[in-house]
Length: 400
Ligand SMILES: Cc1cc2nc3c(=O)[nH]c(=O)nc-3n(C[C@H](O)[C@H](O)[C@H](O)COP(=O)(O)OP(=O)(O)OC[C@H]3O[C@@H](n4cnc5c(N)ncnc54)[C@H](O)[C@@H]3O)c2cc1C
Image (cartoon, rainbow, N blue to C red; front, side, top):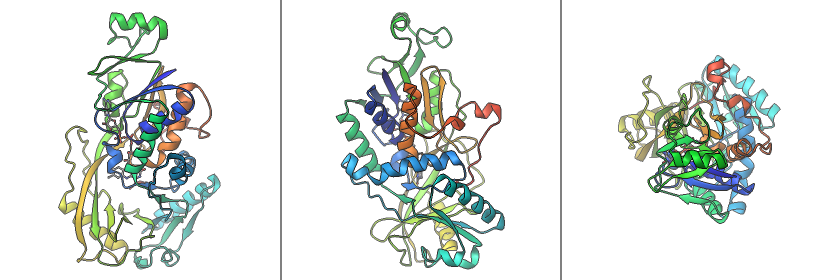
């Protein structure tokens, strides 16, 4: 079984790792450099506090991999289990928190509902008067996405995966199948009789595979379109600022999300902090090949002020050091598409801002889909593409 993975971000590499581990022959084609897409721009947050079971289960299946990553992959990913703290300003949000925590604990996550006063145990300078409730999970934390890419890429190379960087897939045609055969050459069609899979075109020549995995992040809509498949996936620009807080944000403070405003922050290295969030009503689709990768200063000032509204670390003396922008690949219900969308064509995309943390479990789920196995242990059938047509969409409320 030869599987071609399109995209060398953390998701594509985790898929390559799981597939190679189960004995498949794997090729990864990456248009640029490994981790050079959204993965290298992520905040590194890892949390079990989602509002749907499938997201919680993907997290619970991924967390053990992050925990033992240094031992298993030989790369220190700076994994810090400092928790996530969600904050509610309204009773409506607090009620949703209670429902979420009941579901999360039922699934096995150690989340708890806290009063604002109780939450100061984790975030001493929390502006308790602004909030009505909080939730905290000690299973949550952060890790460094760059190091995770390093660990996965070292491991897949050792496992014999053919990793080709600077190798964009420019066309995809199913061969030996009258339905989607439009791009196939005569030679491809002949080869199809032997293997009945896919032919990918690249600048270095074609690659034949039994299955193709679309793990191209915000580019996945374009890649799937090469195979004639439409994905409801919008690339949306999101920013991060690195700041020097005015107050002493403890190094072990949780990643804190003020859910009613969408602002979030967490400690970074050497006394700095990361602040983020999307605050504008307008949220146009971005062109993944041509979006502004720099941070807007005005946005950074707003993000810092909103962080200060939640906790008294980010007053007017806070210095904005630097920042960047990257892309979320957003689906209409803020859940990934994990599905075999056409014979031998598996999509692992649309993580809507949480694909870094879900990469380990995604790799196993994708290997199951490619190999017809049932190893992952997470039922990802709710993440099928046809949910958008059948109206069985999910709803993830914990989005920042
Ligand atoms: C500001 C920001 C903060 C975030 N914070 C978090 C967080 O705290 N926690 C979390 O879990 N997630 C977070 N995310 C989301 C996370 O970054 C993504 O969900 C995750 O990185 C997706 O990984 P990926 O491998 O699918 O995509 P990518 O890392 O984007 O990789 C896709 C790759 O496909 C390649 N590609 C594209 N087209 C082709 C082609 N035709 N042929 C070959 N290769 C191609 C691209 O070059 C790219 O390298 C954040 C994202 C942003 C932007």
